[in-house]
Length: 219
Ligand code: GRF
Image (cartoon, rainbow, N blue to C red; front, side, top):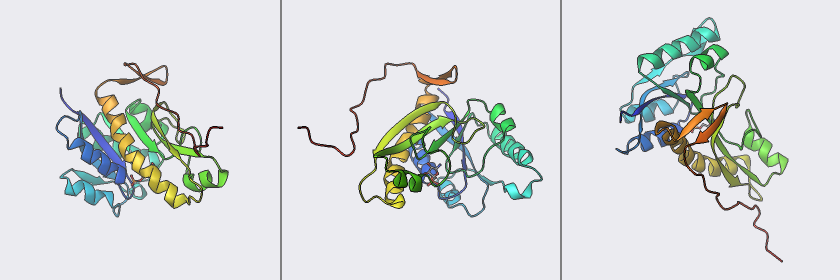
């Protein structure tokens, strides 16, 4: 079966890009990265892509008259590379409605919270301040609103006493690196599909043990 061609959009560090690169390097993984696009020339992730021999393109949004013109340039580069699934991995710009409509159900994003809680920026700061005991990460299809769209997979991560936004971010990031390739694999193999704006799996999904945080003793 031909591999699903991915286009990965980044703006920075690129650790989730690296997780996808590593997953794609396994011969049996059903997807491959055709192109990495960054809107910033100084994104560290560009080096990771180059090291893996992946074609990179810098498309600077500031060089365009409008955001739609920028989106169109991104769209063209993705189409030219034969991309069928766009993976946002720390891409810090909001894609406009026209782009999202053109790539309907072909764009996914990873967000470091259990959506729909804690959408937007400064997630871990807000999580720690709020006192919730469990946070996590979500891979979802992209819709025009920020961090909105059908959820593909989520992982719960405990918020520990004494956590700082940084320590929590680090712990969640480890889980993100496992989760993103899992979501791509589920899409690439056709196991996960969008029906009526919800993701359904064509297999029985079994319950995982609950994460209790903190793990209180039974009395
Ligand atoms: C990740 O935490 C991701 O969930 C969020 O932005 C961060 C990107 O990190 N959307 P990296 O560039 O993949 O290391």
